[in-house]
Length: 256
Image 1 (cartoon, rainbow, N blue to C red):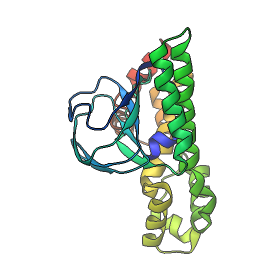
Image 2 (cartoon, rainbow, N blue to C red; image 1 turned 135 degrees about the vertical axis):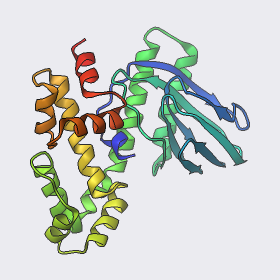
Image 3 (tube, one colour; image 1 turned 90 degrees about the vertical axis):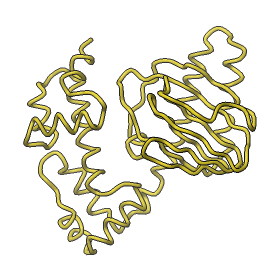
Image 4 (cartoon, rainbow, N blue to C red; image 1 turned 180 degrees about the horizontal axis):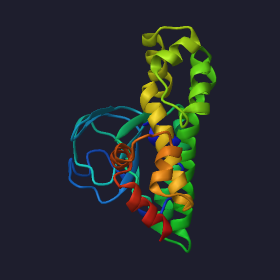
């Protein structure tokens, strides 16, 4: 989830904005042709992805990755709204569920998108894009609210952001900065950021690598070292694992 919440989104195309009534739709999906966000207004259901199970209840937004396969088992059916879209940067995130606090704000954007899509007036796709950007903005803002309450690990967070691309940072080092145990640091980090300290650091490295490659000013070898890696082969494998594309392929696509 953290990668989605930290990503700088570019929406290439809206494929569909729709309302799905309770009990409607299909329960088996294979090789999705687009990314999707859906808000479930009630009910009780479980999504089974290839390597992940997600339980979804009232006022929860689910992200569906492009290319994913999943089945749905519903204990209690309820309505939902969905927006399917394309992104030009080939990024793929893990599927996740995000329970929202102020559901009315999100529901309004999803409903507006569906109404605009059905009417198809001039400029309707641009308007739906703006609603989708608004949904993503609200999700990212809400997700990052805990950051202000993370004083216990703030020294570690500050150190990570200042040094993640300069050196190999150990969890022990971070725990010592906060005067807490490694276990306490890791558990608090996961509670606040929904990921471990090491994965958080790797996410920052990958975001920096992507920005440097997009600039077109650096070679892949340069980007490797400027992002905090010492082994270009390892960097390339990690980049491919993270973005589903190699650094060379991404650099070439960015130039085009």
